[in-house]
Amino acid sequence: MSVTQFLLAALLGLFGYGFYLLRKRFMYWEVRGIAYEKPNYLLGNLNGVRSTRSFLEVWMSTYKKFKGTGPFCGFFWFQRPAAFILDPKLAKSILIKDFNNFVDRGFYNNPEDDPLTGQLFLLDGHRWRVMRNKLSPTFTSGKMKYMFPTVCRVGEEFVRVVSEAIKEEPILEMRDYLARFTTDVIATCAFGIDVNSLKNPNEEFRQMGKRVFTDLRNGRIGLAMINSFPELCRRLHVKQTPDHITEFYMRIVRENIEYRERNKIRRNDFFDMLLDLKNNKLMKSEDGHDMSITVEELAAQAYVFLVAGFETSSTTLSFALYELAQHQAVQERVRKEILEVLDRHSGEFTYESMAEMTYLNQVILETLRLYTVLPVLNRKCLEDYVVPGHPKYVIKKNKRILIPVGAMHRDPDLYPNPDVFNPDHFSPEKVAKRDSIEFLAFGEGPRNCIGMRFGKMEVLIGLVSLLRNFRFSVCDKTTIPMEYNVASYLVSPKSGIYLRVDRL
Image (cartoon, rainbow, N blue to C red; front, side, top):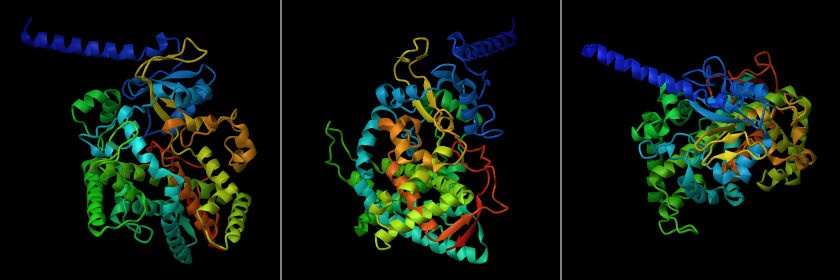
């Protein structure tokens, strides 16, 4: 045999062995007798996402197809087997009862090479616990009260900008306006800068905020590698964040730190709280851990505030107005409540008055149910886990877990007429009867959304600012029924949300 023939035979042998291993991996659920859908060899059960179907469609179709077959069905996250949860009781065990076995989300992070991935949402294990303990005090009700006036000032500017816009054209693309509103809120609270993208939509911070969700460092093959072989990718120093994104936000953070410390400025915002953590080198936790953070860690937490707070809040606001425009009776009831509450407070919008807006809070929660912006919760199993009452169903160590909360929120067994917008789903009486695990827009358990209070406050202030001043209705350009963006991991509209806006 010649050298060429030998090398060719060896290459074919390696290729054949690799194909054998891949095929064996894709038989994972079949040999265990657990229902699953035949996967694509590169993308697993995510075939078609970002091109012909949205992530939401994947979660919804899988949930509907396999619900009732067992507590979970098999799924392939790219080339890795994952347990796709079908039973709310099992979801409750994973998120709360047996949380210690499901602490990690299992997302790729590499803070040493890619500092912005050192954010709380992506961290696992001990790193997550330490960072969560450091950040938890910054999201108390007391700290939210400090930031309330700052968000209200952005809301007032929002009203002025919309008022000017409708003088020329009463039909507005509200999604863009709402994204600029939440951009200004996050810029001032998380990064400590006033950008006023409401007036200047081409402002650099606004444009970079948009690019966070559109500029990807890795293509499909790169994403498949990162998700299938994360440890190998960390050893190879693979980054996930584009360099220009990292450089921009690291520069913004360093400049703001220098400016505040040099001029001894305090604004009682999120950035101030992060600065306190950076500068308090003597602060220790109860178990003796250092509670300070580095500049890179500070930047990563400010960055996740942008990623988690900008898109989710603006999208929720957009969908809320979209539904209120179609349900005028609900809109009038919300507006009446807002005006009555403000009247009780002498016309002043206070932090305490938010709690009195019961029906408005129901509208927000129903919007989050119908349009769950993050439609799936990810976890990773740390030790083999036998599902209680189902000995055949075992989630093995290191296996990924998918909890399709968006699909659960549209399950008729949990919510009657689930595709109809109905804020009464969240009346105090119905909430009291419902298990908390049946509404997971903010997650549940020790790893729920740390910024939940801030997110709710931001959305509520945005709606109060708008509804007390404007009436919203559908127009010829309003897309009914809603069409979703197939390129986004989050639930978002395919195109803009056009509504008619009239000054009251």
